[in-house]
Length: 186
Image (tube, rainbow, N blue to C red; front, top):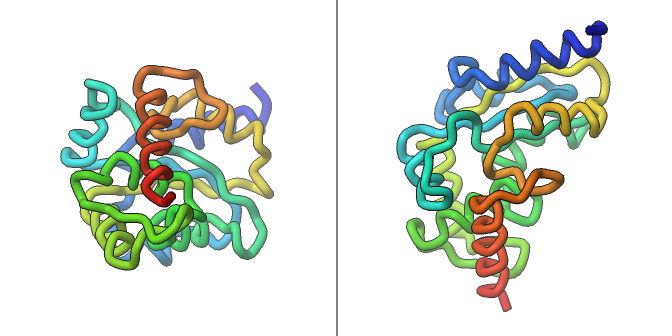
């Protein structure tokens, strides 16, 4: 195992342990997120796991979603996690899009258009994220290449990641829920 493999192994181990996740409601989270490249994994509390049980029949054993952020100023770990996933809208975050599709009925979410929830619905989704989610993250030396993200996704197998992942009944259900959400914008 080379230095890069060892670094990746440690990163995966950190992301795979929910004890390393900071709650979104923790006021220190925003400044704790690095202003550089990195990897992240989203974890949920009991209510989030129950929402996932509705999709797959089982609560996930690991993180719900994982990804990477690059080194460009707008794609730092802090910008990606905080601006896109915590406070953004569904047009700039696949994670929020999937959450909106899963929680649409429970939170009575409505679309403004194909890429945006209404202001009130976006507030509702943001409040849910604050109340129920936590994120583990690790710095990455230099821009995390795409194959690094694929290795993380293969190792963690987060159920809300769809792109490049094996099709499962839960992922098929998620694709259907996302398609239904998109239909409401038409």
